[in-house]
Image (tube, rainbow, N blue to C red; front, side):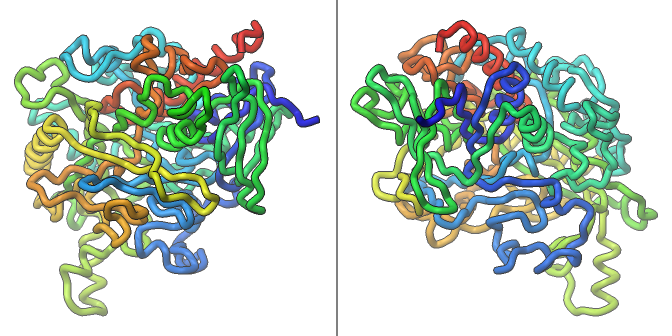
Length: 589
C-alpha cells in the first residue's frame, strides 16, 4: 500500500527549504519534491577562474554568450529565462521574462542575498494612501519570525533606527570598500543616508558554519555554507535527521483531490523516465515560486474546482508583481589610477534605504525604492571588458592597457522599487501551448502604471545627482535591468501566443524601466486575506477552500514593497510551518 506522507512540499527554494527544516525539527515527516536535480557542494564553482572550467564556464553550446544556461556552468543558476522544453507565452502588448532555477535550493543558490525586513507601514498600504490592499497580518505578527530567520541564517548589518529599514539581529558587517565610501559621502551631500548592506552572509561562525572568507563569488554557491541557500543551510541538515525524503527531477503536474475537495495526492512526471507518478499526502505545501504555484493550482481542475484548485475567488494568478528596476553607472575619476586592492567581500557592503518614506506628498509617485551599490574589481570573466572593447579599436598592448586602465573605475547604482498591484498584470493558463511533458504553460500579461514610471524618473534624477557629486561621467546606456546592463533584445519567439523563449526588451520609451519579471522578484498570484471572496489564503497561508493546502513562497504576498522578498518569504514560511505542525498535532488537517 502506498505511503501517505504527513506533508508533501513542492519546491525547495527559500519557502520550501524553510518549511522542510522547521517541520523536520518539530518531528514532522516531510517529502520534498524538486523539479530539478540534487546538488552537492562539489557542484559549485566558487574560487574557480573561467580557464578552470570546460568551455570557459559558458556551457558546451556556448549558451552563456546568448543570455542563459541550462545547468551549472559558472554560476549556480541551473536555469534561466529560457529552459528547453519548458516554454511560457506572453500576451499581445505585454513584455515579461520568467527566470526559473531547476535545482535543489532553487534561486537561493545564486541570488544576491539582500536581506531586508518589510517596514510596519508596508503591511497596511491601503490604510496609508488608499492604493493596493492591506495584508491580513501586521509587522508585529511577522517580526518574531524575522528574528528566528536572522538568528538561524545570519544577516549582516548595524542598528540604524530608520523606520523604512527596520533593525534586526545582525552580525558584524564587512568594511566598506573605496567606491562605497565615495557613494556614502556623495549621498551625505544630498541629505541621503547610506548604510551598511544587509546580506544573508555570516561573518562569525554560526550553527556549525564557518564565517565568510570574502571571496566575492556568492552567485556560484558557497562550498563552506557561509552564505544562505536553502540547499546547504536548511535541506541538507533536515535530510540528516532521517525525517525528510527528497524526490528530485519531479515535475509536478496536478494536485489530486477527493470527493470532499481535500488534496490526497500529487501527480508528477519523473523527468528522468517520463513516467507519471503519484505521491499520497495528508497535507501539501506549495513552494514552487509565485508563478509556478499559481500554474499548479490553475491546472488542478475538477468538478468541485472548475476554475482550478482553491480558486473560488477567481484571483489565483491575479495581481502579479515584480520589483521596479533601474540602473545607472559612472566612471569615477577618484578611482582611476588607484592602487589595486582586494575588493571582493560579499555582495553589497553599502545600500541606501528609502529616505522619503514620510514625504510622499512632495512627490508624484506614492511608493519608494532603495538603492544597491556596486563597484570594485571582481574576478574577470568572459565579457567583462566588452564596454572597453566596444569603445576602443585595435588589439594588442594598446587594448590591454585600456582594459587595465578601465578596470574597477566605475560605481553602479541599482534602484529597487515598489510596484502597486494592478488588474492588468497577471498570469493564466495558455489555452494551447504545453511543455514537453504535456502540462499546460503560463501566459503572462504585464503593465507598469504611472506610479512606477514616475518612480523611475525620480531614480534617474537622484542617481545622476549622486554620481555627479562623485565627479563621475555617466556610462551609457543607463539600463532598466539595473547594474549597468540592458536586457537582451526580444527574440523571434517572444510574440503573441508564442513561447517566450528569450528576455524581452522594454518598449521604446523615455523611461528605461525594467522588463516585468526582469528583477526576478515575482510575488503575488495566490494572495492572502481575510475575505475568501477576494483572496485565496488566510493569514497563515492556508487555502480558504482547501484546508489541507498551504502556500509558502512569494505567492501569498499582498503587496511588493521596495525590500527584496526573500527575507519575508522565509519569515512567512517559518510562521506557516509552525502553524501547520500544530494543526497536524490537533488533527485539524
